[in-house]
Image (cartoon, rainbow, N blue to C red):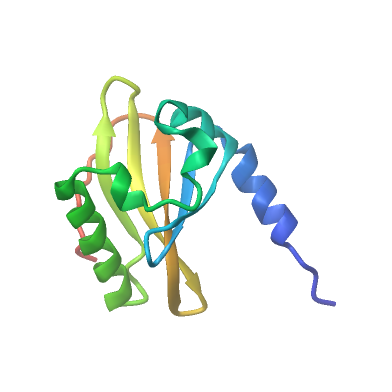
Length: 126
């Protein structure tokens, strides 16, 4: 018997204490978990849903986001890129590919509060 697990998946994301921002391949913000809404309250919070993620970034950052999504699309094994470390909040931020099987359907921004990342920024080698 196949069960619809979408409610469980949403609950996992919603309960995460770290911000999660989900985007489609057009860089439209589709969903922000409660932690993301709170984290980005000063920039509009939940009003950011439906807007372009690229509009929330500098031109240099927007270009990096495009490069990462191109890299995700290039190979099904390309799924995780470390983007930066926020020293003040002691967190690392990643872009993670979202796939329907092997087909790239979007990406999400994942924040992890922890010890400093050792991977190079934007390192995209396997």
